[in-house]
Image 1 (tube, rainbow, N blue to C red):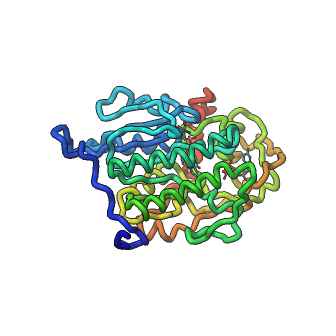
Image 2: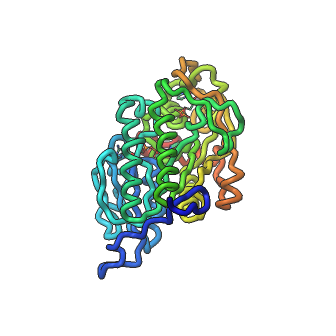
Image 3: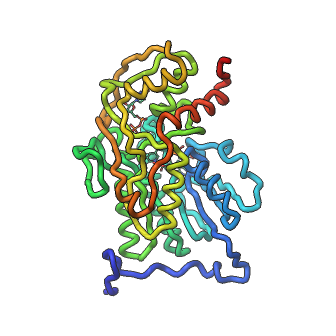
Length: 342
Ligand code: NAD
Ligand code: UDP
């Protein structure tokens, strides 16, 4: 039996790939971003590419992401884009893996639930296998959905959650919970360096216009002059984090010494009615609000306790919802072709 190290870990980390020591070795950090063509992934790639010491490889199957999100990097000598599904093994030599591949919007993750759970379970296994082979550090973007419909408020990382294992959201919620389990098992059993972020609702430019998430829905509806669809009861709450804050938190987590899980989100908490009012005020006060039916297992409240992120990463969000919404409005106006009235 291997000697037990700290944190229940029984093995030291694997040595990096021998290719790193070959004559072709470069001092650049080679970083894989799975799901890098998606909303958060593409903003993360932008930030990583700002550092000239980074080489970035994106692996994405383009289910919800698009090449358009990465167009400014295509052809860049430090950037590679691979059409790849993470449910299949991937052979690349990298130093870090940001593992984001997985649809985040309920419409898309419920569209093919079996595929969603395969992406979370087999996809994460494949990326952990890769991390083990090449000795890379791996960060998983988990989710506040692991807390389910939380009975504790705000949610701390120690809370184990209240998740329906057989509901229509389970492919995503339980998928991410298993992904977290796999991360810790590989860490304890094989010494893999892991990082887990539990991301709360994130919004910003490049969100899919019709992906059904609440901020993108309300902004698109207000710009099209359509009623804002508030799902019943409208008193359910969420906390919305602007994407640049999220990317900053992910990079700090990857670069720091803590495995996590660590909550990353903006603790400002809003009911869906309050969000609808804020969007109306910003874009069109005359647009009506329409109450519509909700979907099953919708969490009633959500607000991160970010004490850990503050203490361990020195991170907290800088952009309030009132500052972030206009930035998203601008992007949606351009993409929908609805200029601001003079
Ligand atoms: P997104 O849907 O915009 O991006 C996901 C990306 O993964 C897309 O580019 C998609 O094509 C790709 N993908 C999906 N399945 C794949 C597969 N099998 N193989 C390869 N690529 C695949 O979503 P996002 O909002 O950018 O979310 C990114 C990550 O953050 C996800 O892991 C999500 O679970 C997590 N997260 C997001 C939020 C949020 O509010 N946006 C909240 C919690 C967690
Ligand atoms: N929601 C809403 N109107 C919409 C879309 C969503 O009122 O057009 C509500 C939904 O019921 C949920 C909240 O907004 O309570 C957040 O939903 P979203 O799908 O954005 O994120 P998640 O449920 O994953 O937090």
